[in-house]
Amino acid sequence: MPDMKAPLEGIKIVDCSRVLAGPYCCELLSLLGADIIKVETHAGDEGRMWPPHEGDMGSSFLGLNANKRSIAVDLKTAAGVDLVKDLARDADALVENFKTGDMERFGLGYDDMKVVNPRLVYTSVSAFGRHGPKGKGLGYEALLQAYSGVMAITGEPGGMPVRCGVSFLDMGTGVMAALATVTALFRREFTGTGGKVETSLLGTALGLMSNTVSNYLQHGYMPERLGTAHPQVVPYQVYPTRDSFIFIASANQNLFERLCRAIGRDEMIDDPRFENNATRVVNREACLKFIFDALAGIDTEPLMAMLDEHGVPYSRVNDLESLWSEGQVQALGVIEDGNDPAYGDFQIMGLPFTITDHDRGLKRTAPRIGEHSREILGELGYDESRIDRLIADNVVAGT
Image (cartoon, rainbow, N blue to C red):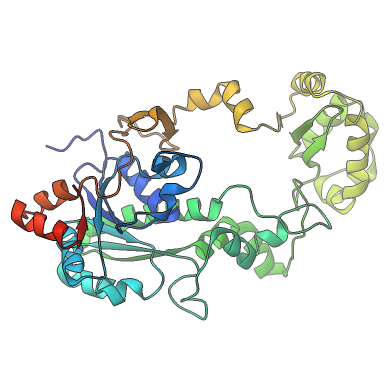
């Protein structure tokens, strides 16, 4: 019987993706209990050697591919294509992020695979989507931040557009792809058939900008770069203190008035320019000057005590080291512990959510290239002589 504490126990997924978005999709599904078979080239996923690394394993690769098994296959050979079809024959889903047209040239496109397995959910991850004038274009995280409009509204006023410091489009697309895959699997329980799921970095960008997109579509509103400030809420941003930086979230009228009292600027409360958020947005610069002038002479620690006393939400601007020292990450329970030949004991990010009665699911480290080739082929019913021949012919890499 499947372990019902792992929601996706018994689900088999063929992971033909690499680098970030596709691997993160499959990593999330693996932590929910799915069996992930990572199909790599003989050279392996290029993300393996992104620094920093130990031996032949980059730490970011470790974080995105733990829990998976690896088989290294030459997809440019007919035998390699047949092998992937055999993997998909009894699989529940296949995830790929090849350039548009590549999987079809291999003979592994959706139309090919639905013949092999009509119940297969085929999840495709791309940069711009598979259709339209950019459908065949290569795309990467920062390029899509520029193309989608995200970069145009990121950065300091009057400054250069800035790339967001995390690859949120790649990782967000991984989340979207995981959600879409699980949704298609759920639908399959009623229809009996799989289907094709298409996700893209551009679609993710637009989805994450839903409020901004709606403002543009309804009003033609074009936001500008405001640094850490909010285009629709004032004051709500990072401020320099005498010794560092702090973010203060005075996101409504009550909190604005509390902030004014906390920093000794009570006169702002009765100033008609600042009587509500709409007027403060219009008079943004004047409002912020009061606050910048007040905070410039206060150190961060006593300022935080003042904000606490008045119930104003804030955060020091943490780096990861200071964040870890706070203890909140540990309280969330989102970190997984494991062991790896190169890293020894390690920790990676696990599921960023919890489910009642779900045992969190890190069971193995990230695989070496082709580490499980023999094991996986044996599960397909290939006998030892056939496996030896595939390895000798360099169709499959393995020991």
